[in-house]
Length: 87
Image (tube, rainbow, N blue to C red; front, side):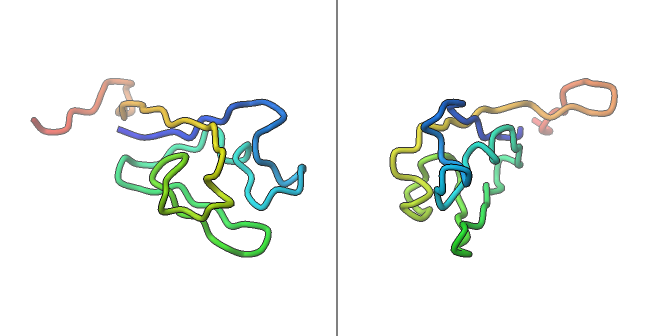
């Protein structure tokens, strides 16, 4: 499985264009492995590492009032078939 960052897609989403320290719109659609983390470096050079939107282990400027969600997608092989996890 992969997990995907999904932004709220409105004018309140954190964006560098709004002079926010992090840009959640830039993270929209980014997929990482289930055990991997989403990462982004702020305008001040502080790296945020999060398991999911709103992760309490990430910097407050990255998580407070975040309305993003995480989605999940099954991995597929080159033929489009679901990859079994060996169970």
